[in-house]
Length: 80
Image (cartoon, rainbow, N blue to C red; front, side):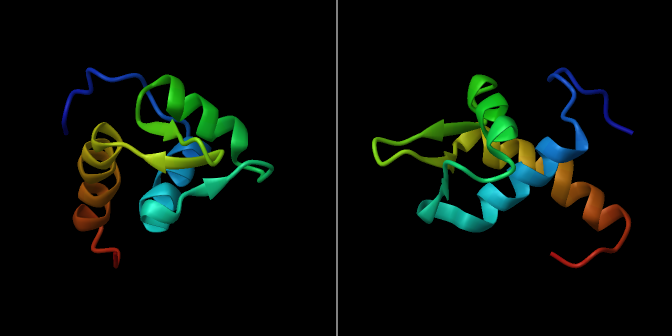
């Protein structure tokens, strides 16, 4: 089991990070239920807010998604 040097992500924030990954460059708009998590992810530099007021995943966010979410899916044989 890896030892994380990064701050813990609550389940809701991990889910928001996954949705950001899936949204790709389209991003996620303001006003959705996960906006508090998107703002938290922005503060952690895992997401960024564009001039169009949409949240998008950053390279750090993609790396965290790969390390934390996809690796867990592989360990438990979940589909991507």
